Length: 438
Image 1 (tube, rainbow, N blue to C red):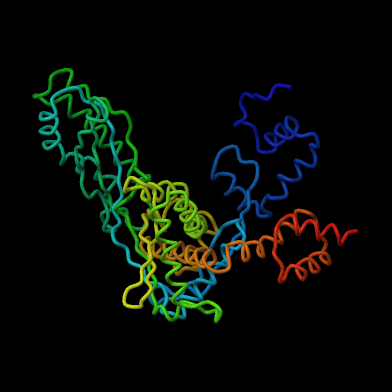
Image 2: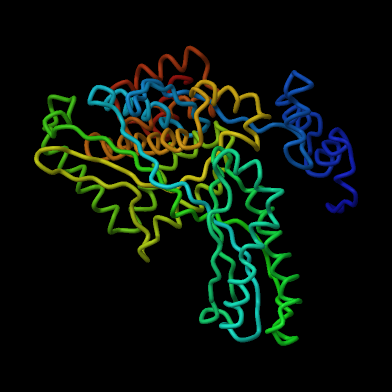
């Protein structure tokens, strides 16, 4: 049977599901039931979800949890986290409690500059292009006033526009490199709208510029698009305490633990294989809050990992030191976030998340997200340098194993009791479950 179809997007949702289930599944009714059981019982909510993207069949759920007791700059937060990975929420909560008893987290927004570029080809004299750019630069601002008026009222707008010569890397390639402040919105649509107008202004004014030859007048705009690399939209989060307060476990020496922790972070700074996994742990915290607040975690991931490579080698996003018997652990991370626009006013759970956080500004959300990443990293490195990562992770993961093997309530109680003080692995849990069933 052919698996291609014409006009799929024009079918109703039910017709799409019929085609999918009949084409790809042996048990059509079971496949339909799997898809439809995740429909929201509220027709209004389901219609809202259906219209977020194209060719919607159903909703794909992620667990939505909370990590309480985060003290950030003297203010208490309960942080929403949307993530499927075991132990992440528990680890963040544990780190929040630990640092809450030691003065809490400090966070500062260092800059909020965002970037967009018009990429174009120009075959001619660069000095003439530079003179042309200097002459028409005010037009880039004046011809976008209709788009920037409201943003300017909120204190944002276009910060600057520069002409960049990139011809050494690619023949005839130049950029308009623009910087923006988009205040509480992430600003993608605003930036892209401005950039497309810059492109029109560039092309139109070139036709009228008397110094250009006919060839030079034919500037070719390749594309106009914001950048998700935002090295000047940075937030810093940190914690510190006397080295003597670093251990809650009498069997673990505080000084030894602090020194081991610093060494673990230093290894992530110089060893890319470790740094990738180290930063992935940070992103467990960051992405879960980004998702729960309706922001674009793919954009955040791309920008963060580019920033981690800014020295030419991929490295740790977090850093640690001991000076004068004070342990300090910090992170500086680029986060282009928004609290208005996009899903923030549409998705009910996003609105719920933002209200739970006190309806933060974009800058306050940057601080919250960075702190969650730092907390997650602290919890992971603490486990790695003390008990090992698997002890806590597998205790949280054991329920997934039991559900996968359809354990009964009674079996779960017996298995959890047996592994209370025993090494946990997938195979050991399955073996013990099978022994109970025999």
